[in-house]
Image (tube, rainbow, N blue to C red):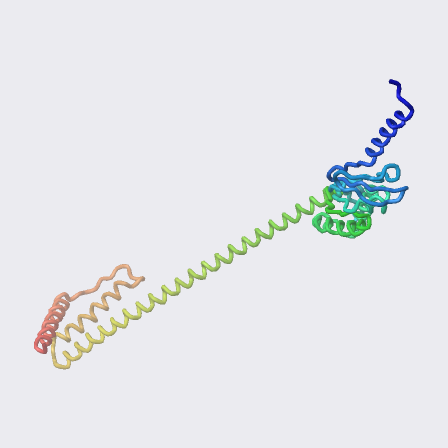
Length: 311
């Protein structure tokens, strides 16, 4: 059957209604947010999920990625405080926190972040010496992060990290630094060697000192022993002399013979031990010496007998 005009109108209207409804349904993927504009003016932000807008009246303005992203900072030359030229590059990590502000507060968001970072890299690194620049990279990253994050806060983003990837001094400067490092190492090696020799000399001196002390202690002990021996010998000699003197006083001929024989033997010993004498010829009264020895025996028997009677 041919369609009437009314039926055709209903079909067209139904198709248009379906199209309009589909235009009002806006699914937003995870990690994204859409801004909604009504007649060109921002009205609200669509979150991830299924959202509805008024077709024809509302439209999607900007599609913002809310995930953390990384932006390469191209290599650039920087002049340090001590007039050294270095080439530097890095990376910036940032995340959009407010889709509306990121969409409408700044034009070309990534380009703005990139230029802001490059400018502050020159400012921060240009205020440092080369040695500080090479040894304090964490300090540079922290300063850059504070400055860039504060500057981008009105844009609705958060700069999470700024990392300097590479710092490349000129070749001649690298060679000079290598020579300086070699000189410093040689200097430390000489110092360590001198310290080792000094310590060895100290230890050697301490050893010699201890050895001298021990030798002195040994000589002291030997002298003490010698003195003690001489004292005992003197005591024995004194006792012998006293005994002989007492025997002489009593008229004992054997004591006189002992005394004379003792002195006679000592004189012979002195003559024989003289260094300038090689040969000695002298008369010797053997009978006198033998008689003196017999007197010594009789004297010893007498002393033993007196001790036995006293006991």
